Image 1 (cartoon, helix red, strand yellow):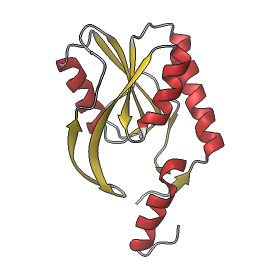
Image 2 (cartoon, helix red, strand yellow; image 1 turned 120 degrees about the vertical axis):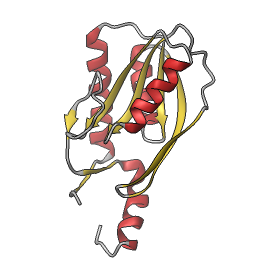
Image 3 (cartoon, helix red, strand yellow; image 1 turned 60 degrees about the vertical axis):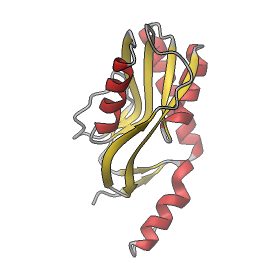
Image 4 (cartoon, one colour; image 1 turned 45 degrees about the horizontal axis):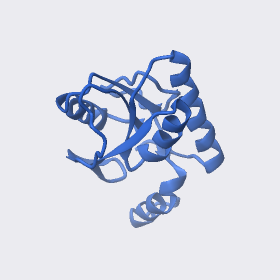
Amino acid sequence: MPGFRYIGWEEYGGLAEALANKVLSSAKPFDLVVGISRGGIPVAMVVSDRLGVKFDTVTVKSYSGIAERGSVRIFPTLTEAIKGKRVLLVDDLVDQGDTMSSVKRFLDEMGAKEVETAVLIKKPWSETHPDYFLQTAEDWIVFPFELNEVNTLRKARGETP
């Protein structure tokens, strides 16, 4: 089991801004930013705002606990048309890559003209390689919006958060 890295709101905000700037510096045009629920929504909102394009979400379920994964399930929650659009798919991190690759395939099947991917943090063993990312980390990342959830799971496992 890897160690835990806790990211506070200030660091999180800095990472979201840095990712938005990295995408902006590419000068690639996007029509829509799609955030993967739940962790990708806050960063996708920042990226969308900085790019000046519409924002939407797709809901995905795969984790059932710390490092406990099930199969990827996509619940279509998109309200924007995808067909013919250049989409930037955003999540907080990519671990194995199943979620990102499954949602990318889903958007391709909906007729997206192009789908690129962006995350704050990438795991070194990920089979999916995002087009934009800031860091590589082996630790279990705990974002500020999941602090209570992770600490509760850790306590239930007899760990000290």
